[in-house]
Image 1 (cartoon, helix red, strand yellow):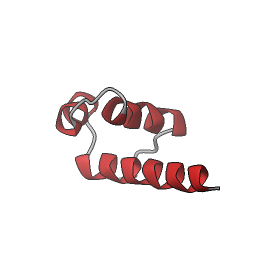
Image 2 (tube, rainbow, N blue to C red; image 1 turned 60 degrees about the horizontal axis):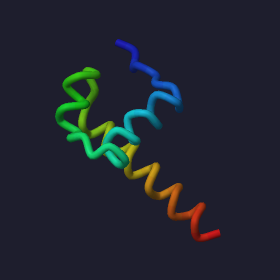
Image 3 (cartoon, one colour; image 1 turned 135 degrees about the vertical axis):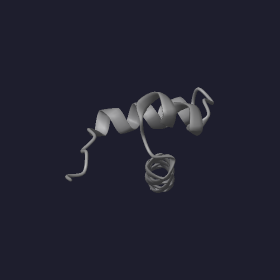
Image 4 (cartoon, helix red, strand yellow; image 1 turned 90 degrees about the vertical axis):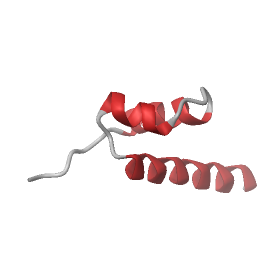
Length: 56
C-alpha cells in the first residue's frame, strides 16, 4: 500500500483552517479523511518555518 501524497497548497489550506479560522483538527481530519497526527506535523512545520522566517 503506497502512501498518499499531498500538495504543498493542500497542506497550507489545512493549516490555515486550524490556525487562522480556528477550526478543530478533529473535525477537519474527519471531513478530509486525514490523520490528526499528520495534521499536527504540518501545523508544527508551518509554525517552525514561520518563526525562522520572521526571525531573519
